[in-house]
Length: 187
Image 1: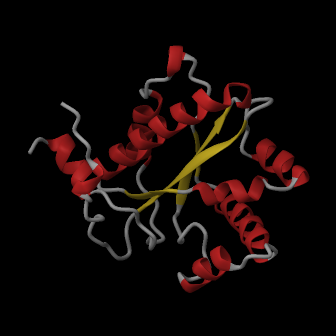
Image 2: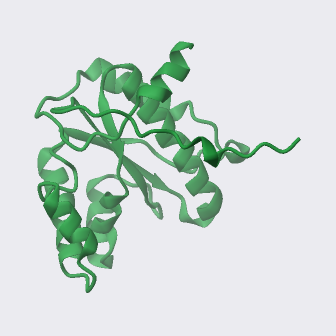
């Protein structure tokens, strides 16, 4: 098996991070892998924002947990509470990817491709990771959305697309078992 396929096969979503920041060199390599992602018609309707500011991450997490707690259906809130009550699983840093909502469909696809580059690059460097849509909960209220967009330096008019949490695993797990029944071959 070649190195790329090995990284894909061994990658898992980390939900338990150490309080240890990856080196700037590794974080730079990950962000550079992100911007090498292809995009439809080369629009690049995204930005890559590396967040190492613990206070900002705490504020995003607190706002997201507040949103979940105030939902009528408490299923997601209870699930996060059962996992330790942290949306970001104590990750020391994250990459937030805002997108141009005027190109919503293509921008979301491109955002997903970019985030896959991030998680595979991180995994190849020994950095645990998880794609995290929960960050978007912090943008649910218009007022907080504007505040967080400014604090994260989103380009004017951009909206939250996705995020990836990064750090070193406190505990590791095996990757999910691939379901071969999901593959359909048409000949």
